[in-house]
Amino acid sequence: METIAILGIGKLGICFALNLERSGYAVLGVDISPAYIETVNRKTLRSFEPRVEEYLLESRNFEATTSLHEALESEAEMFFVCVATPSTPGGGYDHYQIDGIADQLEKFGPNPNPRHLVIVATTMPGYCDELSARLSPLNWRVSYNPEFIAQGNIIHDQQYPDQVLIGEADEIAGQKIEAVYRQMCKNEPVFCRMRRLSAEICKIATNCFLTTKISFANSIGDLATLVGAEPDKILQAIGSDSRIGGKYLGYGYGFGGPCFPRDNRALGKFARDAGYDLLISEATDEVNRRHLDFQFQLWMDNFKEDQPILFDYVTYKKDSILLIESQQLALAEKLARAGRQVMIREREVVVEELRARYGELFQYLILEEKV
Ligand SMILES: NC(=O)c1ccc[n+]([C@@H]2O[C@H](COP(=O)([O-])OP(=O)(O)OC[C@H]3O[C@@H](n4cnc5c(N)ncnc54)[C@H](O)[C@@H]3O)[C@@H](O)[C@H]2O)c1
Image (cartoon, rainbow, N blue to C red; front, side):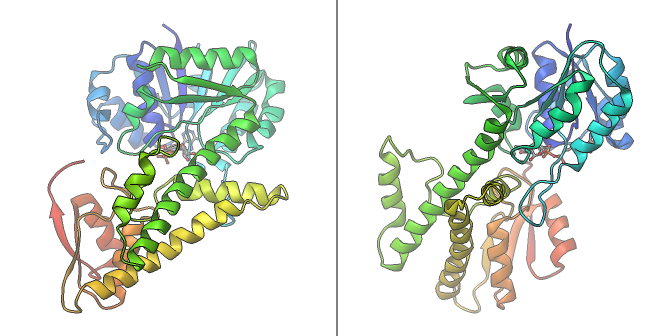
């Protein structure tokens, strides 16, 4: 049985590890927190991501460790890197966690036989080429292989991807990564193989397209609302055109979450640094901000001053517990700060986070249901 190492078994990495294990690999997960590793190895990990707890309980060939050294001493030839790449204030990504791993790989010394370091974490275009220049003398082949998955559906999205994007170190690396996905996926995805730099651009450009689509829909919806037309009917009709498609074309809250806004901004930054004004990325972001202002005014006008306003969820989408850049939360906060009585019905874990951040700015109702 082939061993695969996953470096970083957080939200994305744990799902990938479990899917690989179920498809017949022995998986060694590496992460930094001993307490977290213990919950994984004891199979007591609690997760809001569907099927993670169940797959973990059923797993036979998945082990976790805090020791990268242990993974390097193993038979593993493929190392997938799923650590975090937080956004920088300038809109780029901070690669310090990947750099930290590279430092350790350098200390470990050269591999007698080539090994593959496959970066799954989102990176700024150009980073993986730099990493390759650093690690290829140590017999590492560096490839880029980001995943297009949605929080709340990660396990499923990994099993049934539309496309698998591979920025390959070379032909052999591309074949090896493709073979892993052919074994893991339950469908027949399109394999998009290209150079690392192209794949890095492709990953964030895809999310830029989606944010643009959402901002377009919300702009048309706002305009229709302003003039008394029918936003939903207009957008439904536009989305029925098969050249356009109805996904991400609803009229609603702006985009948020851990990927869309930052990938869109990162593409804008990358373009600026390269001397190209990618106006679409900036406009998409600006539309998102203005849409929030539009919604705020609309709600202020439509709710009487003493009428409580209920939000059924304020996470960035219903099947997630994340509040990152949530536009519904931003709207709730704006209304509450404008003196409106805002009630939020949410899951307990979310309410705890809201209370810690906002105290009693809102009134809270606990939603019992687990996502
Ligand atoms: N979660 C998503 O929905 C999603 C979707 C698309 C892309 N991504 C990208 O995937 C990457 C990971 O995202 P995530 O949401 O899983 O992040 P996360 O913060 O949940 O997980 C990262 C994990 O890496 C671990 N880690 C940090 N340093 C490490 C080291 N030196 N060795 C081993 N482990 C280490 C952390 O402890 C953590 O458990 C990011 O670049 C993100 O942009 C995530």
